[in-house]
Amino acid sequence: MRIKDKVIVITGGASGLGLATATYMVKEKGARVAIFDVNVEAGESAVADLGADSAMFVQTDVSDEASVQRAVDAVMDRYGAIHVCINGAAIPTGFKVLGKEGKAAPLARFAQITAVNINGVFNVMSKCAEQMAKNEAEVGEERGVVINVSSGAAYEGQIGQAAYAASKAAIIGMNMPAARELGAIGVRVNAIAPGLFLTTMVAGLDEKVLASLKEQMEAPRRLGDMREFAHCCAFIVENAYVNAETIRLDGAARLRSK
Ligand SMILES: NC(=O)c1ccc[n+]([C@@H]2O[C@H](COP(=O)([O-])OP(=O)(O)OC[C@H]3O[C@@H](n4cnc5c(N)ncnc54)[C@H](O)[C@@H]3O)[C@@H](O)[C@H]2O)c1
Image (cartoon, rainbow, N blue to C red):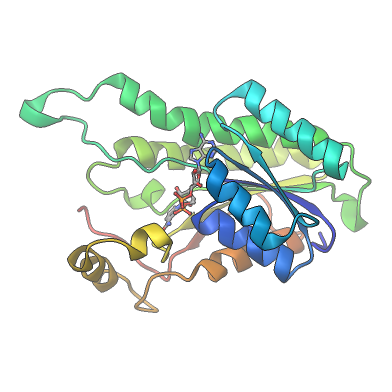
């Protein structure tokens, strides 16, 4: 699918990889973006930077059905279509299966992560796909593209990542059945499993922690550049034969257990 003038919904688009992708899609590919995020200040600042002609922000909690429906309706009112949906919103909170003194972690902590990282992805993907079905098909019968953001943790989760890693593995599981089903309406579904990227949050880590992480990088021996993630999203949108795929974007890095 050609990206120019298309409408791209990006959840978690107010920060990190989502914001870098929104910026890349607007400034280098000529798309219009709709940022769905809980962070109002960051969302509004992103629109100020990208320009109100090419970007909109809707305060959205991806885990809430009514909130996502309102956001999708707002995009349809403003742009009249949704062509691409990139699901980047997630919470990375870590906790162990057994906490202090061997006490089992409260189930509510697990559920909090899956509510955003799994339910949130399904919630936004399904509501966007409903709108994509109405698009006029492009060459090759394409009507839309979904990109769900997984993580290297889905494969080699570290200690303390049982909930986060399980939620990211769910994204990979969703890929094939969703791609098979939505293929009938011309919508492709793919996932990206990023390794470690140099987001503001990661850059702000303690020097020692950052040095230990860098030392675990492989080839190239550095953290990912956020533009490389954005570029991978663009590649998936533009290449009509990439479907039901999970791209590990990690420079061959495999993090240790802690
Ligand atoms: N940064 C990395 O190195 C890395 C590595 C592997 C996977 N990932 C994945 O990439 C994605 C983006 O990560 P990031 O590092 O850019 O994170 P980030 O924290 O910078 O951005 C996440 C955004 O999601 C938003 N968000 C959180 N809960 C939300 C909710 N309920 N509804 C709507 N928005 C919500 C936050 O406000 C934030 O703006 C995530 O899915 C993350 O799991 C990141």
